[in-house]
Each structure stands twice: as C-alpha cells, then as structure tokens.
Length: 361
Image (cartoon, rainbow, N blue to C red):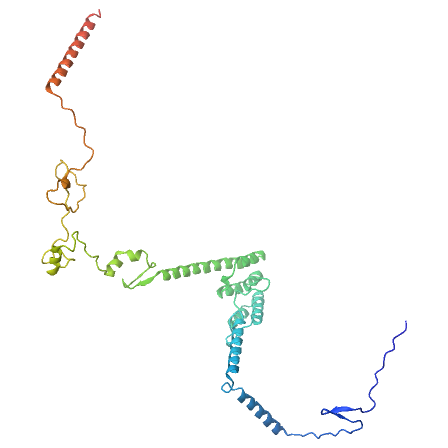
C-alpha cells in the first residue's frame, strides 16, 4: 500500500503585502516603530484612582435613571430571596453567619466520631458550636446516641440524653447495646428514658392545666375549664354577672284602663301591688274543690291561678272520670220473698238429712 505524501509546510521567506491601519502596505516598505511612552508609578496610580472615582460617581443611586434604579432594586430583592431560600439547615453560628449544609454534615460526622470514641468533651464542643444537634443522622441512619450505645460509652450516652438525644428513638440504641453485651448502657438507657418520659408527661400535664386555667373577668377569679363549660352555668358565675331579672308579665293586658292608671300614678310593675309596692305581684294560686272527699284528703292536685267569670258553673264542674258502679236498690217485697224462699230451702234440706239419718239402720 502506497503511503500518502504529505504536503510540507513552507514558512514565509520574505515580507509580503500586509495591511496596516486599514491600508495595504506595499512590499518592501519598512515598518516604522512608534516609541512606547513610559509613565511612572505615581501617574498610573493617580489614573486608576481617578477612574474608580468616576465609576463610583456614575453608579450613585441618586444619579441613576429611574428604570435602572428599579432594575437594580429588583435584582437586590431577588438576590435576598435566593439567600433566604438557600438558607442552610441547622441554625447559625455564634458569629451570626448561616451554617451551610456542608458544615452541618462535617459537624455531624465529628459528633458521631466523638460518640464512637467516647469523647464527651468533643461532643459538648460540637454541640456548643451550634453546627448540628444531638439528633443528627448520617446517610446510613446512625445517630450519635446509637454510636455511643454500640461502643458502650455510658458517659457519652448520658451526655447525649441530657442534650436532647431523648427526642430520637431509643429502641435502636437499646438493640445495639444489648447486641454488643453492654448491659450497663442498656439499663442506663431504660432508666433515663423512663425519667425523661415521666418529665415529659408531667410537663404536658402542666401545660394542659395551664391551658385550661383562665381568668374570669366577671368572677374576678381563675377557673379551670374552657369557656362555655360548667363554670359559665355555676351559681357563683351567675350571681357575679348581676344580670337584670326578666321583666314581669302579668296575666292582664297592659292596655287595660286599670293597669294604665296604676302606671300613671307612679306604680313600678317590677314591684308588688299597692301604693308602697310591697303587695303581691300575682293572685293567690288555688285548688278548686271538685270531689266529695274531706278537706285536705287529697293534696296531689297542683295549685294554679284561675280566671273565670262570675257564676260560671263550668269552672267548678266535677271532672269527668271513671265513676264507681252504682248498686241496684231492690224493694222490700222483693227482699221478703227471697228471704222466705231461702228459709223454705233450708227446712227442706234439714228434713232430708233427718230421714237419711233414720234410715241408715
């Protein structure tokens, strides 16, 4: 197979026609070199300072056009929203700078390492920095409490539980401690978890009690129930309300002449009758006598105010009810015949018995 012959590069041997400042220069024309102007350092510094001052003066918001100023403000707002959106998880440092996710990840791994090695001071230092908390989990789901329980460091376990590690699940840490044979860690976990659970229950009970307790403005005292419950219907609350009594409604029309005359003379209808207002408000309730029993024999009838016209017989008519059966009254002649018939029957029976007795022989 024949090899392809490559074309060799031939460098230029002489100056050809070239362009200079937009004009073609003839071949053979010599190039005239312009001598460079050398400036001192002081002149260069003053030049750049003047240039920076001019740029800053041009970008002053007071001298910017209105549209350009608005665009700049919008850019600043978008930049601020972007910073708020990209705010890292895990709080902020003591210096005020936000903690990035990478810093939180590194601090969390340091915390797990200190828990694995039983370095209590290292754990406290990491938690004091505020880069992460005791509930940090790595990509495999391990927490500092799980690492300390797996390694059997009881002091590290106690410190993590005191710093907020009780918020995570204890069953994983208990399983790891029992699997590695760290009985003392398992006992401590159970005891501390029980103490924290009781404290949490007491705190929740106190919070609920405080939520139920409220100040009643009417009674000027504290009550332990919600609005609209038993306290609102209690006697103390009702008496403290000092609410006006319901108006008195008499069983007579207020348009009557007598009622209007009493009001005109200064009578207060919320008081009793009479000039001093000390009389009765309502008529006496009575019980109508509708039966033939003695007075006071039957007391279960309700007393009520009766209003009926004079000589109204229907008002005192005996109540219709089940009446006892009326026995038949027979005449004296009828009673005599029946008595004679009974006497004759007894005589016949006596004679029959006597004959039977005598014929027994």
